[in-house]
Image 1 (cartoon, helix red, strand yellow):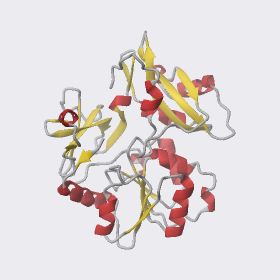
Image 2 (cartoon, one colour; image 1 turned 90 degrees about the vertical axis):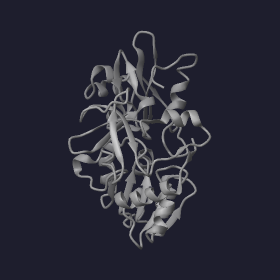
Image 3 (cartoon, helix red, strand yellow; image 1 turned 60 degrees about the horizontal axis):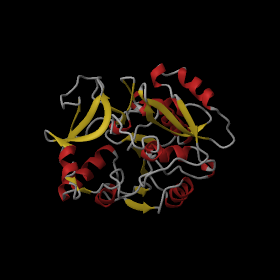
Image 4 (cartoon, one colour; image 1 turned 180 degrees about the vertical axis):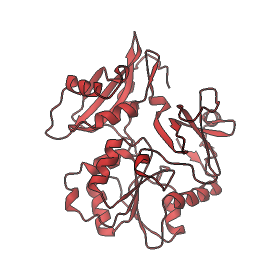
Length: 328
């Protein structure tokens, strides 16, 4: 969806960008994520505002990314976790000089702990930063951080009531950086705001130190037998399997349980794994109701949006023809 933003919204985003991801004079920022997406959009304005050079690539792929970092001596970039996963698995990564890259921001979807640690192994000189806070410690790397100054974020239940610290709910936010409306979609805009807060559609919680954690998108949450399953939690476990390259977890219809947990998996080249083996692997780390009941393997990479996120909708919708989901 297109969004309408005031100049003041953009300016506020520039200030916030430099709070959590400082761009000093002489920095070189690579637009590897699409600039039509909010993840990288503010940097079009933040880079010149703070004296940084901008570099663009037509479309992200690991080779193009590495070529640009090496040739342009890139210091800063922002990627979504799917892109980071592709980069860390790039077989020629070690052949490039990426020592200029010092700051890698990430956001847009939950970051699996296994991916965080793998990224730190292959890019040891790069500082990983979530999209809300620049002061991440080792135990906070899977957090999206704390709100910037002037931004109010809460976790609420379905009625809009704020939940207690540590409890799960929808993240809502308000501040000068929030969009004005969805372009030409007044009804969707009305649904997106409640009591002055923007409903992010993200499910998560806040810890005792004020850090926020995103578990899933509300529309991707699976309800099986009355229990909520967060796809990101299941994906994080599957990503730890050494044979797995990509995974998407989503709900499929079931007459008894409402939904069943399904995983669509892409294996690394030359690796062999069957569904029973993967299910048994998941049982070691997950409660029984969270374990995938069906596994499908794909010979090609999973479908992705223009912003690089895996399109679970494309994978899921074929199972829901002529049926309605409880979560939408």
